Amino acid sequence: MNRARMLAVMLALLAPLPFAGALNALAAPAAQEGPSVSFEGTFPLTVEAGDYDLVYLVLDFAPGAGIPLHFHGGPALVVGMEGELTLLPEGGTERKLMPGDVVNETARVQHTMTNKSAANTRILAVILLPKGQDVTTVLDTASTVSGPTLANEGAFPLAGVTAGEYDLVNLVLDFAPGAQIPLHFHGGPAVVVGKEGELTLRPEGGMEHKVTPGMVVNERAGVRHVMINVSSANAAIFAGLLVPKGAEITTLVAQAAPEAAAATEPAGMPRTGGGGPGEWLWLAALLLAAGAVTSLTYAARGRRSGI
Image (tube, rainbow, N blue to C red; front, side, top):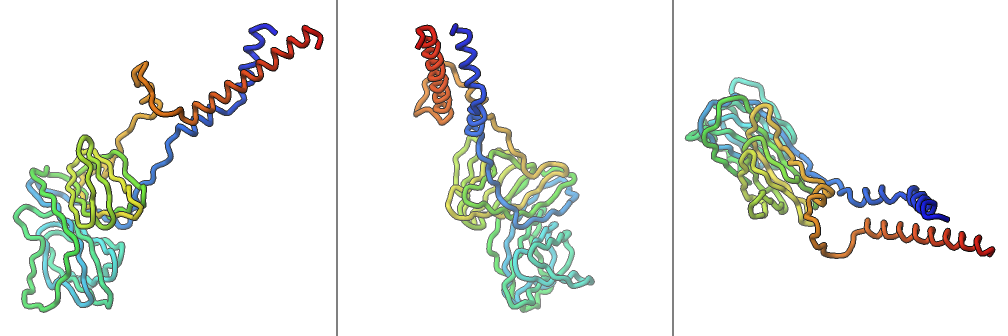
């Protein structure tokens, strides 16, 4: 058999082998699990230019506790997390705030909040507070009702906010073990408060640190970072954001594919460690091909010698 026919046979033997597909499957990264959103709310706002504080509050109301007639110094986005809370706007109709319900309260609107149930109630509030204003002003100072307990809080001073249309956003994110948000940035400033467990925060070009229950992290718009749960237990955060209308809350930063990174590796650079699974597959393919060619060669010699 001449060399041309031998080469053709070798290529024919290699062609049906699914090594390319196997290599692609081995090289493809596993899909990354992201966090789940357990609570969320949005409050569309028209914001005047100025300085503000982006405030996040977690309030617990024991049975019978409440806030008598009061108002807030800025617009508030309230989300029910557990239990039942009775809301009564002055001159309005009473309503119940249940888990997952969202109430958008405009600044200085007077109302009461009371836990009339026999169980604890928890609410999550994000407030855009103009600098110098009080979060809450109580009008009924003669009331003897017990107030709520402040379970968690955070504040992010925002200087020089541009006038325009925004969304005030309230989120609770749950990270199972291994879940993450890969390199990303937010369309507006975010105040983050640790809810439970331990999250690892990796700012691009900065020092990684942990976010634990009660810890506050203020994230500026456009700052790129990674959030990942590297622990073996669930982790969660509260997050309040002020996002310009039309901007994305979270934008993932495109990462170079592994093959693209390999293509840019300088030629002749030494490689460390053993070969990956793909290299062993190709070695097996070449050995099979070599065996097949050897068999064909012996067969051809046998025919010439009359064996």
